Length: 512
Image (cartoon, rainbow, N blue to C red; front, side, top):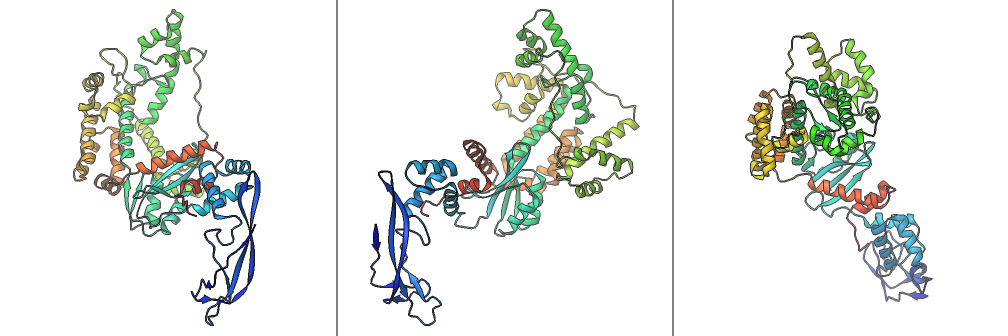
């Protein structure tokens, strides 16, 4: 099919002058919709004109026929629109297969190019953004997603979770005024370096979640009621013990629990009856009965992001007298350490506590007994106790209220933690950060190690926490976009690369 544009004159795109002097014709071959399964090519003749303006740098120009095809395009605009829609809905290779079935021979690379052309950022510069990480492969590689919290759209997707990459992105966007983030020190450092003018806002969900984790860690001292970490009364530790010692005690108790379960089984008891007598889940008991010896726990391989990866070097430096965290942090950074200094400080804190306990053997350990539900007799797990600790009385069911009363009666630490948790919830919901410094001081004075640690981290990140209480922004929208991104990756069977994910997550302009 051949057609020509017979306009009486042309308009120069540079100077805007009308010209009636034709220079010639230019031929364009464009792919169009198929007809009854057969390919259709549009043979288009486009007129070229001479620009008569002496000062114009363009001597000739062609007619612009945007209604038919974009400049330099190899297919009509309506075909490009279909390619973009299918690529955005299905991805590169699925769209290629479907287009071939429709009679449009388009490769997956062409589909991706069309997607990139149609994917565009927000029309206005973002001023309030949310930053969060997401996993390419869980516990292995991570990327960064940046969301415009005002318009609820994805701005960009970074291929890694690196301070330098995030800092460079923020430097390219000096218009950013507010940065919402989780409590990861990596993004806090990137925000300080890349956007010092912006206010940082800690995510409220993660703040409350960290408080719940601190409560759970403290309640671990009463023993656990799950098959993964089971303590006998003799192996419980005191409130002065560290988390590392607690974990070691739980591991040593596995053999005792394993022997107890098998002894009850040899008496002819069923798994349900063993569960009622011990308070352990029936499925965990059934799993343990399948083994002749306690099963070993699998541990993830150490990586440069963990200070334990450099344990041998750190131990040697510790023996040589290098005891400050900043000095050791600089030394292992030179050897490829990718983690944070706070992560290293937790390792060193365990070493310091071990030395202190070794130098003071007169410390008496008070054994904490598990707190049990008065009606069922089952031990209340630390996970449930931590969740009940931060739940207001008015939202408790009758069973939960009974457990809270039992915990208050048997655990003075729970009484202190629940009082602090209720005050903290009031501060968060009241949108007033004025009482927060007093709350931090009271939490430190409790001498409950996990609560003291949580309060000190709040103090170090005080400005971001204060903004989280007083400002309406939070990272919930970023979390929602991450869920959408994960759904997209699963739909593409994990084969989606960064370019395709970026093209499909960014706002899609259907007019291009």
